[in-house]
Length: 459
Image (tube, rainbow, N blue to C red; front, top):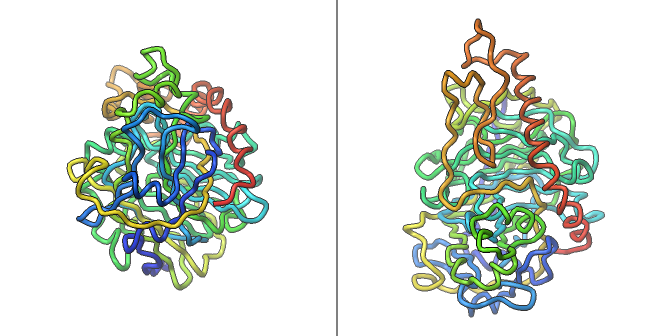
């Protein structure tokens, strides 16, 4: 299979804030947040550049909030992309703090407005969640027919925002280092997203496991092993449902998703609502910041097929099911890849010292769709633990509410370490039923109302 010949299209670390617009409108997800403009963000120290070249994007952690809510920043790239390899190196993220809802994502706001050009959520979570949610949202007519071996998938394989309360086609990373406190305590990591005419694949590499070429001049995803998540198959015309995306960083508070899951957060024990907690506890958000070490978007100048993992590569998380066949849709002529990176907590500073202010341009941006909500504990998440031999079930991955998923016990003649074709079907049914019962009611509460507000918002 012909491999993509990726070259750098945009290196965002060169004049980082000059390549983004600032959104200053009301939060389309009903967050208790006051998105500020470039001048305010610079003077208040919400956006800064570290002397080591990394970038800080924070929030107000000094003042009791009022008006629209706590001061924060929402950035959207001035450039748009159809197909890409985006790679980001993140040293620290705002996730893992009660009341927060941070995201790094992309979407297109042209055509008839959201969601006609799709949305790709790369990093997203709420409150003290411990696992990253990766989700696609689309207009009608897009569903996935392939999955990965490393993740537990949510109840819906339909990306349509009008189906299942806009759950989207979502994957929940089983790696406790993929989001929030576990991510930050491990020094962050690298996320890479490859988007072609045949679908979307995402990789997460915890700090210390990054491929040597992932942020180089000619990255080769085919050497990176099994993706953390893959969306593909002939159930979606990917080029008509996903196009002209901006990349977005934001940190909102509460909102449709964060408020609906706040009762499971440790801060809720004092009887406060999400808004009351965010309003009256500024110091709780000192660590609610992004620290970006690197962000690059790559483009393929010629035709390319989606990358296949090398035969020696092994997935880093627990196996759930074998990936389905990939669509044979003709390969695109132009493909872009983006990468984002963050720095370790040790290298991350607070809103003060060590950072140089960089001017930024202003312009509004919409916010990401609400994925399935999964509460986390304030401490780093506990790695998924496979059941003991006496439990009798096949391990499927962590339940975001705690515990593990298991399939029906294997027959005595069958090894519990091997899943047959029939077992794979049972596994998927079991996962779907458990997610449907635990997640659907909560997620439906806020998704439709939130996304209805999004239409007409320009970023």
